[in-house]
Image (tube, rainbow, N blue to C red; front, side, top):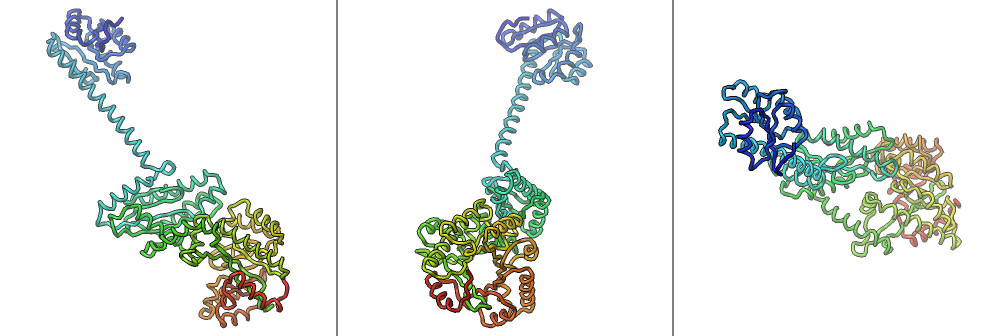
Length: 576
């Protein structure tokens, strides 16, 4: 059948010619009316052509109207096509059955032209409205998904920064009677994890942490967000936060991943006391608290206090000026002598860095070193110190002075640089020095971060002739296990033991034990932090150990150290 007009199509299935002619007359100006005389032709045309509406008589040959209705209503292609049945006025049972079978409307014969026109147009309008609602619902769904995608972090499914700021502000202000915490968390040395393992491992850690936050925070009225990288922020009602339990549970989840690296989250907590403070400032304050303890393995979280703002401003100044300070020569090395009780003279020294700021004067290492360890600048500063020490040793040798070895600190971030050993050997070659002239001090925290890596690099150090010292021994909680595994030459006992010698029997007992253990293991010992005559008197009874502390000398500028060293040279037994 060929369509005569470019109009919507009404398919008319009726074998009564008079009824067909009347219907064609009613709709000929608005529709292209196609008529068939049996149910099979009706289905065939409908399946091959696009129709706007079908008018189907229940009394059709070959296939009756009920069969046609059953076929078309089960075909998803006709979900948007209304099927109107044509019945006799007396056939109320047929009307009901047709409506139950999915008919959109019914027309009764004999026809009333006005009624037919209204009913068909009403059905078409109803279906058009339904289509519009479906289309709008689909659009709304797409818009919702788009907004949801824009609100969420792609990797973890948590809220992103912008969304968290908005939703946290709304939540806190909507419930002024509820006290909230903002908790800022991140992972210690996460960059190193990505460097050591595949990025997929880092992503697995982040997704595991995110799932843990979702199941522990969100059901209790809280919000979870991944702000960036390995930084997460939570907004939690104070009554629902057990910070110790939160961190312990997170540790357990991460340990179950079976990754051969100590993955530790640290947290800063800000108690919200001003519900109208911008959320980003709340997060900044929680982050300040985090920075106070990040890397401190004895304390995994801290609460914000007002003094932290001043600290934040100071840290911003440090970060702002650090690169120029290194270029401008504001950093310099000091040397603190190490005394041998057995030889009664200086036997070595430790190089320590000092920062003389042109405006703020001398900045304490306790203020800038932790900042540099967090932002990675410590790697550049360490290398500067190493080279300055090599320059000093070379100058001493050129002056004909019998030099002593100098120890330098190797911060834990250096162990993630593959060229560490190569850089040190290149320095020695540049200044024509021997490895035994430069001692390397590592910290217990470096072992805690990645034991296997530190063991491996330490062995390489010693194979090349370097002596390795363990600084601040006893400050952490893995000391004995570390001694069992780590190949080191000298233990530098943490000054905390020395400070308690005069008051604590336990401190004295532990110190005796450490010295005996070191002797049995063939290690040397340096006692740090000796400040009083009483401390020295007690230590001198324990054996032939070396001493470092203010009782003998503070760290000195190089020129002052040379003067002090000259005083001891006549009594000194040569070491090198």
